Length: 308
Ligand SMILES: NC(=O)c1ccc[n+]([C@@H]2O[C@H](COP(=O)([O-])OP(=O)(O)OC[C@H]3O[C@@H](n4cnc5c(N)ncnc54)[C@H](OP(=O)(O)O)[C@@H]3O)[C@@H](O)[C@H]2O)c1
Image (cartoon, rainbow, N blue to C red):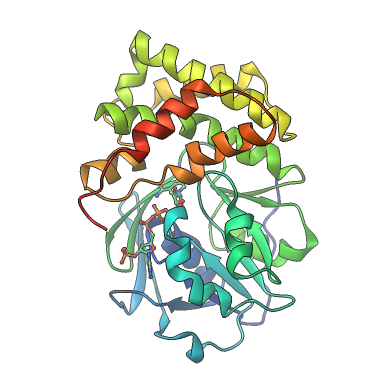
């Protein structure tokens, strides 16, 4: 993975269509707006006039326009899909509206199978996985609070097809890396999520629980299974990545809540199918047994959300 230098922004004013104006989508769209792009929000349930991103007490804000039906869409240089993975089918109509040759749809979602999910609704468009490293929380419609973690905010494929997007995001203030081997990037990010999200959501405890010996041991076992499956999928993962992930998780402030814990506490649907479900499906494709991930999947799928 390498970080690219920031260059001057292009003079034209392209438009990004944002499907999923939540914590992550607002941060990505805000960076593009800061680089001079127009932002068109698709199907927001509560419309808002401006995007506000707060970071360390500093607020940036940019105007947006809204589309309430796919029939209102004009030409867009890029589409960003940032609904949670299990909400993708709910925005199928919006995604399908961009299904044409040359369309670029950036999928900012955790877990696996980002492009496969997209291709169900837009088989002709080019799906671009975007791996998110920053932490963001939506505080109100149009408002996101950004916390950066580590040296990189986003990773996109090293492809000429999205070079302008990478430059615009960098010009908009995000630290964007590109990678030729996105399989390894996706599986490396998945490693920490595969253990931390389920273990915190199932135990109802913050990330400090991963400092306890029994939970750290379980996290290692879950991740060891993921390493084997990732390797079978072509990711350059080793057990060293497991130890790095454990060290990182144990260094996170102990009162941090993973998104899956937050969703459980709020009674929302959990985003487990793209994470643990994807791991189990990949294991089955390769004839590998992943008993701990299968157990975690069964436990998570038994949780009934209080909300739809
Ligand atoms: N937040 C983070 O720090 C973070 C970090 C790394 C990766 N990620 C990943 O990034 C992805 C997005 O997460 P997030 O935290 O940004 O989620 P989020 O804040 O819940 O945002 C999802 C947005 O999609 C909207 N949405 C859902 N269904 C919709 C529909 N049918 N029509 C219109 N809008 C709809 C939601 O609108 P409503 O508000 O109206 O429901 C919400 O604004 C996930 O895969 C997550 O795992 C998040």
